Length: 220
Image 1 (cartoon, rainbow, N blue to C red):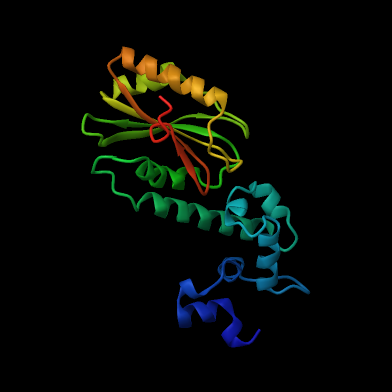
Image 2: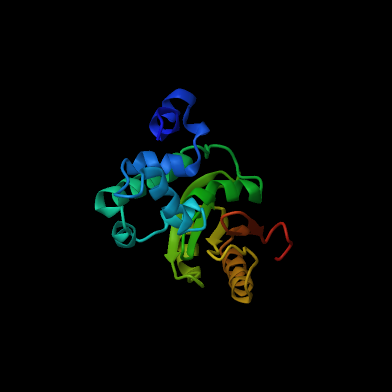
């Protein structure tokens, strides 16, 4: 490649925002292999996930390291960079003020759930002014579901003296609409929380691009 086409030189001259995803990956990969330069290698990796970075983020380390031209060192570099990006996003939203909308819940939780290939259930515990006390991951499931552990959710709220709860979980298939089980479990949690003088404010289901709010859709 000419100097102007080399990703590292292009970044230094024009800034990281000027580079395509494949070019940024190429900088992390550093080298290609015989018959395939580093940009071509990066594009091939993106092609394996239909151009989605989240697909690479969720890749098993062993699988990624086993791909032609990658290996352990490059796989570790890629996965470390993705994790640093995720942690950077988690630092961006201050949690001092009250949560006032489901969109805020989505923005708060997306960095934790984006790109996952399995379901996770999280609980946001809030005080009487809807300010965050603690955010807890309560269960980890598979691709098609996870357990809503109602006794554990209530116990966490009581331990932290929380007045309000927001339940959050993800749908890896990209469709945030609730299943019949989601609806039943939300109703059961609402009733159990109310019996302990705790208010379930919302249940937000998150996919990478969209979310569903039980509160907004008046599903209570």
